[in-house]
Amino acid sequence: MSLIRKRKVGGSDADDFFARATSHSLKPTIINEESKFVVVTYWWGRGNLNKNTQRPCPEELEPGQPLDVPPIKFEEMIQNWEQACAKHKCNYLAEEYPEFAVKGGYQHAINFKPYFIDIALAACYPRGVLYIDGDMKIKLYPGICDAEGVDYMARGWNTDPRPGNWKKTNKFCFDPYVFEMSGGTMFFGNTYHGRNLLKVWQRETAKHPGKADDRILSMALMLQKMLISLSTIQLPIEYLWLDMDYDDYLKSGKDYEKKYVSISHPECLTGEDRAATEGASSNRYPRSYDRYVSNYLYCDWDEIYEYLQFDNKDQIKPFKPYFNFLEEHDVVDLIPYAKKYGSYNPIAKKNSELLDQVQIRVRDKLVLVSPHDYPSVSLHKVGSEREALVTILKYIINGQSVVYVPGRSARSAKTVVAKALENELDFVARNESNSKARAKAEYSLDLDKDYPMYFGSNNKTLKHWLLMSESFAEMEKLFNRTYLFLTRIHCGWV
Image 1 (cartoon, rainbow, N blue to C red):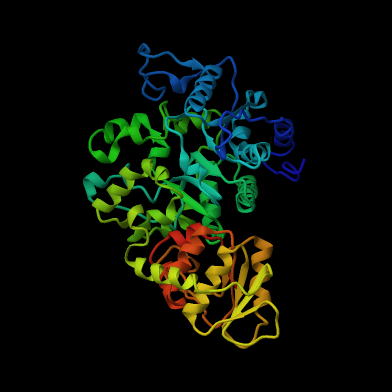
Image 2: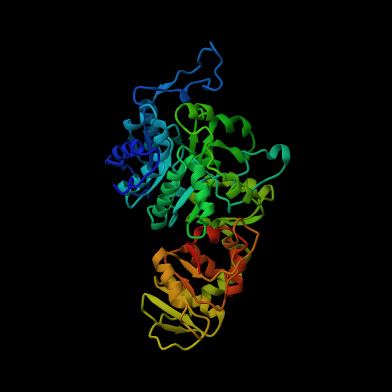
């Protein structure tokens, strides 16, 4: 099968494991037709006790100490997992892989996650998949996974400082440009970019056998600068609530109300030493991880626009304690959903009025917008930058793509259009940034305003961006004020 071709994770033994595992035929249980995702997991060990469900936890148990809570078998754990999904009207799929319940199988099971999610995506098409571990539980319907056009979501280490040491240091880190995630909660959209991310993860996993799957993916995102082309959301701790850690540490204050928790991890965490005895690498970080990932943290100020981030108010609820915490501690400026574009509302209002005055003159799928005359039936000529921006917005709202040519030569227009079509991108331009304000220079925007630009019709955040702008200089400024345009628009630089 294509999933295992030329794999080199432990040689033929690994290939045999994966060949048998990938031959499974997966079928989701659909109980909510309106839901756009399926909660998925995989497991092994039928008939065996899961010691992570006992109390005290294995790492805390003293010799001769009796158990307060006995462990349960893996199949009972999965039954509880399925019942929690059904209770909260989530479609679900839990696949058993007895192939991994053998000596040495734990190592292969660790490496299998990106392959399993890939197969699950195919089985659940056109729905996306929300992977959570089998010892976790859905506590509230995670409506954020119904959001439009998102390729990937996960609990972000560097965007939610609440579990950190801030109570002692009074220091807070918010850096959405270094996406380090926890592997317990991961959403993949059934999109070109979501599927491509899984292929990248599979290739990188083959290079780092036995290493932590989430660290492998974090490093791949950084090395390949994938935030540029992906649409991502970094989730707060309400989507991976570690009961045994957070219930005590975060036991007071409105920032930590458990009624907002969507996904919890109520069981013991797997100790690093025990993971090693079960077959995982003793050092679970990929080589040079800090050099390529952690050392890029800046922890700077940013802006969050709820109206840009969410499709509706219901999606915001689990984020409210998190957003309130960030704002109250001056980590970010938060523009509430009701205030829409905040200080940019007057510009958006004026642009909306101008939109009504623009007439659709071109009916082609790709429209050429320019202040100059070109011998093309697809040309819509404009007289100013603001007219150009509003005209571009008019066409993409109408479902047509646009190439904007500011100069007298259209030759480079083919370059941006070709890149956009080949890689399914929403915005393509020449970016001359060498800024050090973010983890990668390419994560900031220094727009070459004399070079052609491509605008696709399928991204609502791109439409917000245009509506908030009265010039291309303003577009650039906006891009560099908030992480939302980088992380929610499929961008490409030439």
